[in-house]
Length: 444
Image (cartoon, helix red, strand yellow):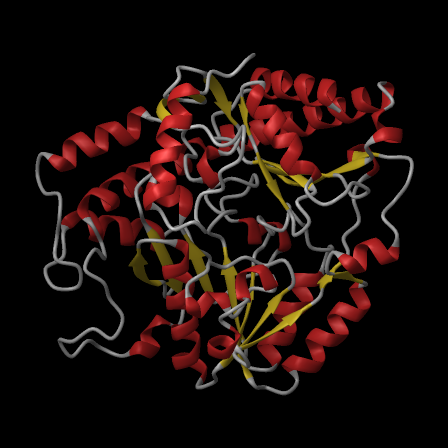
């Protein structure tokens, strides 16, 4: 397909004049300007059409323009659009909180709503400090927990931390990420990443990673360990079997809380309702977002220790004008209910995708791609990444741009831009995946 660009270029020229220059990346052939979308299909302002394998950062779990979301919006907008945050609650807010309290693995679940993943992590940080009377945190290399000043301290990437070190220094200790084995059926390579390559990308051995973790936790100086059950922006990085279980045990011994950042990985995306379920652990705090709002700004911090805040005296210590927004809550309730209802079907699709990915790897081996561009498939369910561990930095970004020209939305990830991320709507069929895989193989 040959992209028409005239209208997009005109609009992007207007954008460049009024938006902060550090927000939207503007290249010669990237980006396009979106106009409308439905399901997996997106149309830009030049009437080019695409298949979206990003779900817009994992947000649109039910696809673009879901009938469930549109119905909730129509129903609620006819009644009440804006509420009063922490003053006069709405039925929609109460229903959503009850629903969320019922889908977490602890009994005394209390919830604070927000507008973004960063909001949820900020709330989790504050809650952990109040509950433990400690003020430092542990996180892991590659973790991405938001870019507001609280969550930023948990982030290891200097690209994000630069210029703000004075404000965030000494707030968190960032640990190396442990290596994880990858099943042979997901390896399209005749070589494996060397120890030096793994080290350069923030990995270390499992024994060393746990040794450093244990040393820090034994100090009993930390309020919580913050982690993504499956790292997203780092390139769908998985934890070694049993590592998080050991982490949970050690945290309990040292009075440290576990904060699971499920903003990207939650709500069925990995084949379980919550990704931490794959590890057999029970966090104290869960941060949720993205898919929760069905496309509207909505997040939640769900905790078993929220009572540490104490009873409201009439002046909330942590709130915002749009907390519990009626439109977002109505949509969130229907989206989460639909994911709960269709979870068995989502899990079935995830199993079928495993088969398709393995077939894709075999095809790439047959085509000789293992010699030219060795890669491994990482992640779980509908949260996958193709890691091109021998390529120059930015390889996946270039591949993503080429895929855009072929009519596919994808995103690069990993600190080196060497992972092609695939996080499509949970409604994506195997026929859609096969279409993408054929084009990826031909480009490689």
